[in-house]
Image (cartoon, rainbow, N blue to C red; front, side, top):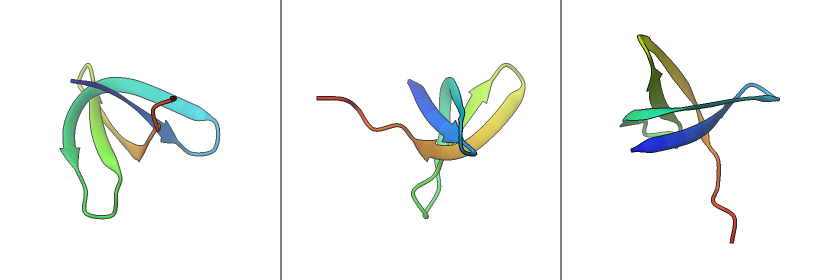
Length: 44
């Protein structure tokens, strides 16, 4: 499942969901790299 996260103050990353952390952050995989950040909320 594709997910978009915010890493830092202005960088967003979209990738395959790897895992969800207890503090609300999620990890996504882009190629062979894994990024961790806060999920972007869906618009109405």
